[in-house]
Amino acid sequence: MKVFFEESGEEREVKGFCSVCFAGGEGADPPVDLVSPSGLVHAGLDGGKTFCGYDATGDDWWWRV
Image 1 (spheres, helix red, strand yellow):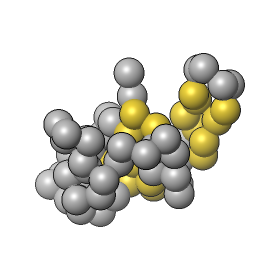
Image 2 (cartoon, rainbow, N blue to C red):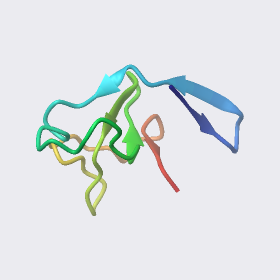
Image 3 (tube, rainbow, N blue to C red):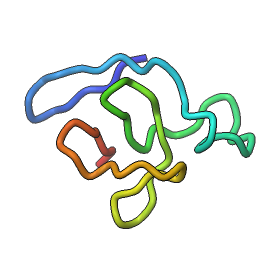
């Protein structure tokens, strides 16, 4: 699966889902909240953090809009 950044036309390959963010059995197809620079999907929280604790406010983190 790939995600796209519309403003620049860039695409990023999704390599997997964070085992901490999605450990609660979210199903086989959890929503793509945000994608890390390495291509892992994470669940986002208010304030720019991921559920697993990363600061995802940098430009290289892609948030779903």
